[in-house]
Image 1 (cartoon, rainbow, N blue to C red):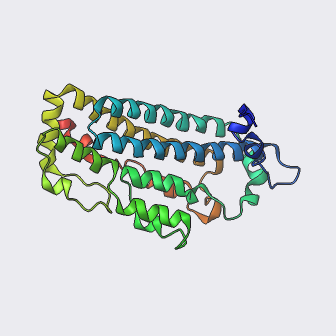
Image 2: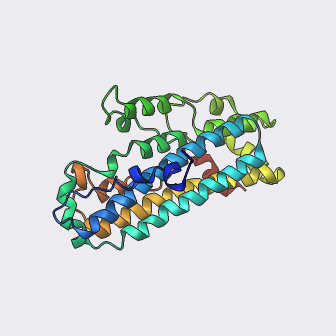
Image 3: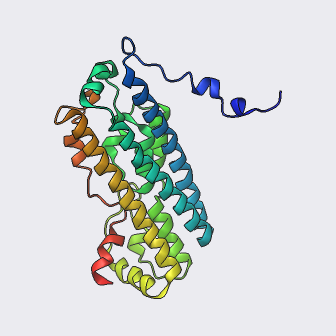
Length: 260
């Protein structure tokens, strides 16, 4: 059978996956389902691209790494912009079907946790929310133990001849990257002497800022929709989300600003 648009994209299966649970069903539940399913597809693609970026850094392919970072940043803009679509739903429209979500919550998105881990925002407590032996838990355990994008970037700088300190290269990769003051002169020298690598550093800052923008927009969307009520699934809602703000995944790239 010849490949067609429908068969290649598995459209019959894809378009059968939006199944509202509310009576009627409530009009806005379809929008809610589609937006969140699309989020999961974009999370899958972002993880795919960050893994590719790590491999490009290992191969010292700077032009392709910059290109891939541009794609990641463009996708991230789309992900953030989808919040505008969700915000067309009023609090009462969300309440019309919210009870049907029962224990379901975006807080449970294993793919977003995996994206956080590969970027460096590792959290043992987040891993332990998934039952042992499940595919989600295994994926997060693997990400917990493997080097992050930041570790790949530091090894890349080392391969380019920059004197990256051992304490930065040999850090515990199961922990989020912490500031390494002895790395700061190296990064500052790159900014002053190597415009190509400085550009790569700036794209990483863009990525970090984009993740922080996503968190901020997510907080405001939740506040706009449910106020200070607990989130679905018993999560703390906006109160918890606020605690995730202003946590850079590449702290050294922010801290060197005052020294440039």
